[in-house]
Length: 274
Ligand code: ATP
Image (cartoon, rainbow, N blue to C red; front, side, top):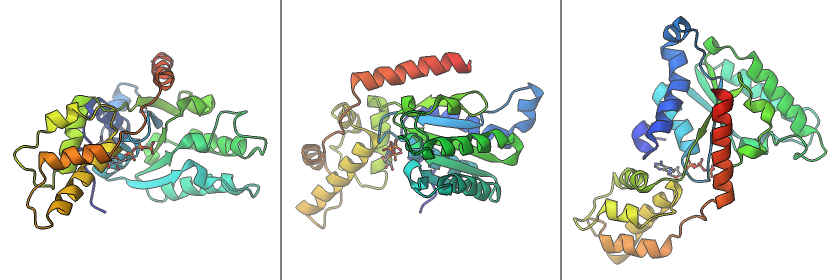
């Protein structure tokens, strides 16, 4: 796989900056932090709608910082055998400690540690949560292990994980606005010759409601349309994007209730963390 850089992530400059601080400063500016008595966040939770760059951001910050990247999807660690899931969590952190500096990334963390009462009666969720809290509480900043997680449902994550000293930086990764969509279009057409009639600003305006993942699909579809028309074609033109816009539908936008929940979360955690 090609090495990712920040240039592969369109838009989101404020999120990139805060993520970079959380991950890079403890590695690169440990002295400056301790001079001011500041501690870097132990864990960062990225939250927002599906397809809007959370995984991409995690991979990009690991790559730019030169950190090993150990990634696991919430549900993957679940096992019906007693004790297996907790052992899997412990083994993951042991691997990270053996590969420092490293990022441990929990994708869809709500699938691993749903808030108590949501996880059914098996008790696996509670034991996994307890193990994860033990691992987080045992992490020392200088050990070189940073924990990132992503979720679409921060309201489903057990609040114990969000206390200071655990996932204590929460970053909303919002759906892209027009300016961000233009940058994402630029990222996904970087290696594509475009005809002079392709106007990325105009396409950004016409892709309201598209996520980053949708825009990536749109650009792929435009290139395919150009090749369907003429396998020898040298460039993708505006008409190919018009065809692609008929074929690629935006993902369903988060409901206003979901956006309100994200908003409330941001305000609530903003106050809690300040
Ligand atoms: P989910 O919640 O479904 O896991 P996610 O928020 O983690 O989604 P990603 O996996 O980061 O979303 O994005 C999916 C794909 O969409 C990326 O691999 C990339 O091709 C494209 N994409 C998303 N956001 C951006 C962006 N800001 N810039 C460029 N490409 C993007």
